[in-house]
Amino acid sequence: MKNLDSVRCGVRYAAVPLTLAALAGCSEGRTKRPNIIVMMTDDHTTQAMSCYGSLLVETPNLDRLAREGMLFESCYVPNAISGPSRACILTGKYSHVNGFTDNSRTFDGDQQTFPKLLHDAGYQTAMIGKWHLNSDPQGFDFWSILVGQGEYYSPLFVENGEERTEPGYVTDIITDKAIGFLERRDKSRPFAMLYYHKAPHRNWMPAQRHLGVNDDRVFPEPFNLLDDYSGRGSAARGQAMEIGRDMWPEWDLKLMTPEQLAQSYELETSGDANKDDVSRANDWRSSVMQYQAAYNRMTPEERANWDRAYAPRIAEYERMKGRVSQEELTRWKYQQYMKDYCAVIKGVDENVGRLLDYLEEIGELDNTIIVYTSDQGFFLGEHGWFDKRFMYEECQRTPLLVRYPKAVAAGVRTRALAMNIDLAPTFVDMAGLEVPADMQGRSLKDVLTSGGKTPEAWRTGVYYHYYEYPSWHSVKRHYGIRTNDYKLIHFYNDVDEWELYDLKKDPHEMCNVYNDPEYAAVRSDMHARLEKLQQECGDTDPCEREYEFFRGADQL
Ligand code: SGN
Ligand code: CA
Image 1 (tube, rainbow, N blue to C red):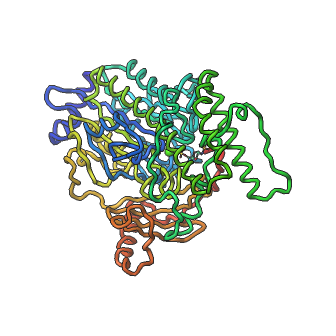
Image 2: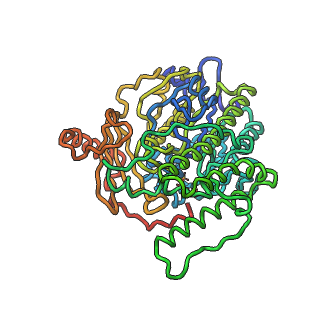
Image 3: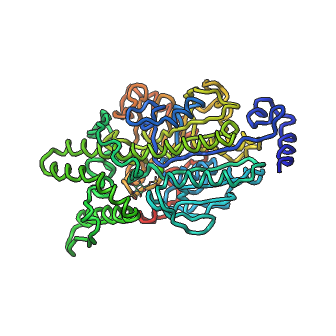
């Protein structure tokens, strides 16, 4: 295989510029193409990464990637939700083209993806962790995926088609499997591995060693934790993702005693209950039952540690209930949310460090393009919210770090507008293959080698389109454009509302200036840019597209 690789390399690079040859590791005396590792987490946002300036949590191993590689300040997703984002990354295409518009879809695995292209070109490919595309992975020599959302403890995997429950904590297990694949691989060929974590997805369950690590911490609150949504429209007001109102005490905040966890519960609604009562009862049942199921996956010893760790929180809640204002309760819930979320991030960071150390040990660290990203950002209390979905900064923006010392200078930050659909063409390009014309993202090679300057003729706006409504968290369908300075959003379906934000003056998107006469020129310019982007990407009838009836939240 080594020979074949060098033949491929030699032929492919005979007539291409030096930079490209260097990128693919084919410079003099070398015949190796770069390995590729995509590290992706689920719902890890830049506000919880110290290299992005977070005050919430230290992430030394992710900071190392930033220090030794490039940090993207402005990477955006086209559709801020799990399955759609994953499909965008695999295909390099927008949701309306790859067909996976919301989490209820089934990914058409027969279509072109970057792992398939790399596999066909001789790479060994692996997919490990959260897949969430409702069809079996294709194009991988080895795959071991969580079922659906996956579990934190004793998670169930499907490995090359066979189910297996693995004891332990999900972030550690995914890393063990990744290292196992690297140990077993054919060392004469390059590899491309998708290393996709469940963490820090809801309900933010920390590893045993991180239980209680944040007990004494008081987390800084975002200034708009108690946002009242004035200055915005019905979409911001109509959502169901407020920490104060919508967070589930049992599932999200772990407010159940061991005795309550051991009981069995019935749905407590009488026949004449109204719609709101039924919906509240359903929420309560989901919260209790999901928590019981997750808790029962732990061993008796793990459960005992868990009980000890959460007992003080439960006692505090009991003391507070009915005695404090709504505002105080929201602020308290925010603190508990951050304690768990940041403890889960510690598990991610440690495991990223473990994988980096292993790569160093086997001498592959510098031969490997290492990307760290998330399927989208997340709200950590901004606007009073958890979850994502909105085209607002906290979740449209996603982390992106790239380490590859052979081509990417260390410690550089770029403001170039990047998108996750750029990853597929970037990998294909950096492996020395032709980027297929139907990929809609752009190779980031020129950005990566630019020393932080945005290349000439780079994109000036990013497109967004979110479809999953009605569904979890009630975020209305919307599409829009973000440029360096402004954001224009159209909420549609059961509303018809436009929002325009001046990101320089209002980076936290608190004040919609769409109807402000001072912005008339900006507004028409943004409309023109939006239409142009829609033409380019083929989303020309965004509100009218045929839309199958949403299958319901159970499958998500
Ligand atoms: C689950 C969560 C939601 C979350 C979706 C989508 N509820 O349904 O809060 O928005 O996943 O998340 S839970 O009760 O099951 O925790 S995504 O990242 O997979 O898109
Ligand atoms: Ca996600």
